Image (cartoon, rainbow, N blue to C red):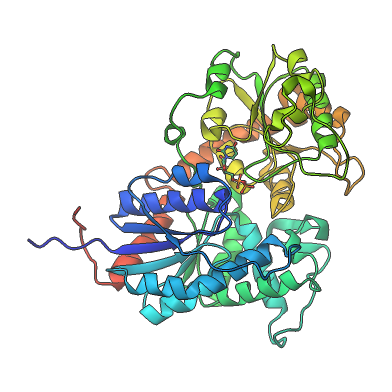
Length: 480
Ligand code: UDP
């Protein structure tokens, strides 16, 4: 027969649900829409959300790189540095894996994994970096790299304060992703090296879409024309469909019993946790708002206090996040609220008709899921690039209200602020209304991006065609 083997794309996922979930979704589309075979390569170390691994589509193969020693890194090493070291130390294993991969057509390293780019060059295949977040973040990386043009390696400069970005966006230092804030921190050197390697990539696949960041997309187009930076392809939003999250769920059963458009969903992602004090404040604020809520409670961060969990929930403070909620809270709110421990089927929750608003840590996947479901947000950023995302969402995108910190850079958002901002988003006739309306408009824009002839669909098509042409895979690829 004249059947051709499927061209094979290897995608390298950094640890973390927020990285793995959208990369798996990209892999699925390469297989199901473009006839590639795809292997998602993960690391054995630092995997914290087994739930995310179990959601990988069946059409995508997976393999884990062997564990590498990391115990020599000091306990206080920032997570970014640990990730960069993990990737660097895993390169020999990755080389072995890539050398044995048949019909390799492209390598797609996730953000943090650009150290793998030379392997693609070695094997003569294109390498496209996948950025699981927005283009504004990549603009900050590019500015950092440009700032060090002609500056000897090892010498570092701070980004200007505030940082002016395309579209009139002005970012305060405090809102930059943590690792970009100070050139004196060791993690900054890693970040700069990561960014410097980006110039050797063949392109970037971005988990964003044109209408989300139009001026930044245009600015990158200009840069690519001038050869100043590899081309950028906004191919998102990569959002799982709710049907990927199968099985019974107490959350969904509860939502089924709530009135349409009545529930505030509260969740801080796969890694976000609040202090015990902040958890109590949030509980009081949700109660005071008068609105219904579905709250995914995670174990609190230890904030030095000697708080004891409440006896009534079994007092099992080591394993049960609900045990840390204030005394009597669950009982008092049982008619209007549900608290669940650790994990909810988030896309199903956001697409449920009862869900009206999302109090979110602004992780980019959560953001895109909310946008895709037309759910307006209350931005409560915690770490990584979440403060930047919050600026974007409240500002140019206009789909979020911000929960203000009590004292500027403080940890505690007060109960009064929480109740006010929830009421504004749910009922407000001006600010709340504008954000609710914009959430509906952006939902339509997100749907258009992946509709036939949509901007993101076409962008991925363009990349897929390039990969196939380069290996001489023209025409139809037959299923095997
Ligand atoms: N997620 C989920 N249930 C939860 C918490 C998280 O399904 O209870 C999923 C969420 O839908 C999203 C991902 O995990 O796809 C979290 O990614 P995000 O970028 O929002 O935040 P991160 O966890 O990386 O901080």
